[in-house]
Structures are given as C-alpha cells and as structure tokens.
Image (cartoon, rainbow over all chains, first blue to last red; front, side):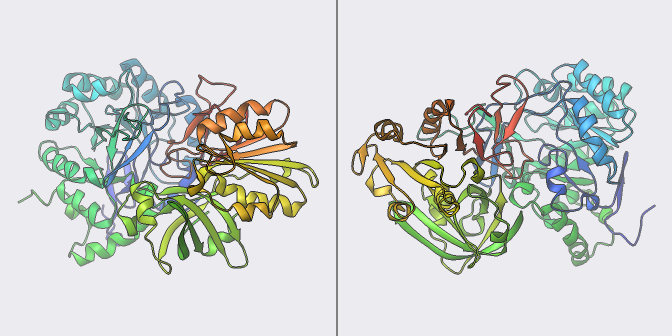
Length: 308
Length: 259
C-alpha cells in the first residue's frame, strides 16, 4: 500500500524503499565513508561495491581520467572477497534499516553462483545485483553481458541458489540491449539495473599513450545520461520487470527524467564524487519538484513518457 | 572533514604558471597536520566535472586562511587561475594524513626535499618543525629558474639548497645530485615531488626514516572509489593495499610500492 504521507515511498522486488534514491555500485564502497558524512538511513537503498569470490586488487593506476562532462574509470573490481565482505562490512550495514543490494561479479558461472549463494544466505542482503557488464576486467565478466544466451544461463543458475530477488545490471556496450533485457527476464530476473558504463579511452598528449593504465575504461557521468534515457525508454516498454535507472544523474530533475523514461528507482554514481552529499540533497529536493510538476506520488512518473 | 564554499582572498601568479591561491573558511580549523590536502571543485568557474586534490602549502589559523600552490597547466587549473578574489570555491577537506611532526625531536635535524609544485606542502611542515625546535634543511629542485617560488621564505626557516635541471639557478642537476654533494646530516627526511625523485629517495631510507608525500589521480578523495590505490610493500603482488587519499598521502618508505 502506498503511504500517501510520503510521496517518494516505493516498493520493488525485495526492496521496501523510503524513496527511489540509492548510491550506485562501485561509487559508495560499503557505505563507511559516506556514512561519516550523513545518516545512511535516509537512502532508499544501498548498492554495495562488487563482491567477487576471492579478494581482488584491481588494475594498476592511473585508474581514473576526466572527460567532457564525465569520467573514465578502470578500477578493476577491487574488493576484499565475499567472505571478508560478509564478515567485516555487512554486520554494520544490517543495523541501518535500509535495504542492502549486494553487487556480484565473477569470471565463471561457478564464481557467480558461489558468491550469490553466500550473500543471499546472510539474511542481511535484500537483493542481488548481477554485474554482467564490468568493462574493466579482461578475463571475463563482459562476455556475460554481451551474449543474451550466456546472460540468460547465468541468471537462471544464480536464481536457483538465491533466496532474494535478483537484478541484472545490463551493459550499454551491445548492439541490442532490448534483446539482452528480454533474455534475462525470460531466465527469471526480478529486475534490471541499467546502464553500466560505456567503454571509452583517453590518450595523454605528452606521453602519447593512453592515460589509464588499463588503456580502456568505463565512461560515466552526465555525458552518458542521454544514452541511458534512450535505453531505459526502449527496454521498459519491452519487459514487465522493474528497472533501476542510472547513468549521469546529478539532480532531482534528472531523477524525474529517468523515471519518466521508465525507471522505477534510480542509482547515483559519479555525482557522489563531485558532491558527497548529493544523495540526501536530491532526496530533500524531490518532493518540491514533484509538487512543481503537479505529481502527487513519484510512482506516477514511471514510464509516463511512453504510456498513453 | 567538511564541504564548504570558501572565499578566495588571493589568487596570483608567483612564478611562471605557478599560482598561489588563498582561501578563507571554517574548515581551516580542522587542519591537523602539514601535508594534508583539500579536494577542490572549480567546476562552477570552469566547467570541469571532478574535484582536484591540492596539498595545503600553509595555514593561517588566526585569519582562518589556507594557501594552495598550483601549476596552471591542465584545462581545470588554467581556468582556476582566472577565479577572481571575492569568489566562492567549493572545497572538501581537510583530507588525508600529513607528515608526522614527531619523527623529529626538538634540536634534531630534518631534511626537507621537494621538487616543483611538490615543494608547497613542505612550507607549512618547515614552519611547524622549526617552531618545535627542529633544525630544518631544505633541498629543492625545479626545472628552471622561472618556476621557482618561496625561496626567500624558506631561507628564513633554515639553510636552503637549490638545483635546476638547466642550471639557471643553484646547482645544475637534480636534488639527488645536490644531496650527494652537500651530504646533509639529518634524523628524518620528508619529501614531496615527482615520482622519479621519490623513487630515488627511497634508497636513502636504509638507516633513517624517510616520509614521502604521494600524488595519484583521485575520484572521491574520501576512500570510497578506490582510484588511488597502491600495493603494500610486504605484499607487492597480492590484494592488500593502501589508499593515497585516506591512508596517505604521506607514507613512510617501506610501506607501499611506489606506482
């Protein structure tokens, strides 16, 4: 039931949210740093940095580079491994009373299944987000995100072990994202996250070599917002499962635009680096923005750009 | 740490392409050690997206002001040079851990080694070491005379030796050449500058502690994005790490593998 007193409240599979705002995976680590700046309870949900079966150091530095209205990153899924995350990060997060979404990455189906199983067994994680779209890991990950059959098989396997809903995070680096979305929906995905970063590169004019040590990186920030809007607009009309939208959101107006395109909730990524208080700021601004556009409850926005 | 719109009270060129910017605000009260940095978002003035890290060159607690030294070289810093006095700049800080003042007892000797804009954080360090009674010697390197700054100010704090790559001021060569020729005595070394200089100084650490302030491209500046990560020296191929932003930017030689 909708809480008429809170025009931002929403419910997605596994997620009872005070508002549609969550920090995006990889931009918020495990919450400790931003938790020192504001009360994480106010967030709609928190998406954790990707967990892998074993600890990963990630790529050499430089790992980031600025681009016009955006940034490239090639962190390389650095994380302490799923067991350390469960032991050292989750207990602190369980006390927050905010839904936690664990992002999972791997290089083999077995990796994903093992990591998903461990995290969904904790009773602390409300949903899983399958990262099949990290462009920065050479030995795997990306092929799960570019071939609909492989993505569907992976989704199916993870669904058989997961006790919580599974969202699949889609890559924009494909010819037909609608085909990817339909394939994972048919395989049992409970929701979609989109879009991950776009593969890009910058070259240093002095050294005449790529700036990033990994050479290529994932482009994020406002530069990719129109791509995300277009893809969410197309996919939301082709599937019935909800979409968590992301890609360059910086303001309450951006949130509204994503939801009009067809997102049911949104994630904020790069904008956290520019303004560490951006999530609470957007949450605070949203009610007055909704009122200004004559919207009583935020759910009225979902897909309104294409609904007749 | 806080995010504050600080007031620009000074922004001037002090050497070729080298600028001094003074900022006034409350976060100055939170600065704990020389070598800490601020993450500045000049975007409102110059259309760039990300913040940029700058080490704090000096602090004036009474005036609630901090001073930054920067080289106007990239798109962001070139525009930064045009920010007028009286404007506001969005600053996150103070961030990171600075140089450990307790590495030298009063009357002991400190050697401060700097290169280029890396000389900047050594100014506040030198002032605080001297205030404590530590005898400070400076050895600085620049590409040439036109980009040198703060020479007289450093001379009032202790002996100051200079090297330039082209020989236009001081000794011709690098700071390492200078150290070899003057053979300064010291109980601890503190350094900030380009990576080749820091790598060369690593070898001096065998019998005396050496502290290096490192620079790395950063995203968030607060430890969340994992952009500025280095391997630890005791596990150079493994998963253990230090973040330059929150574990550094100052590290004791032997703690991390220089990038």
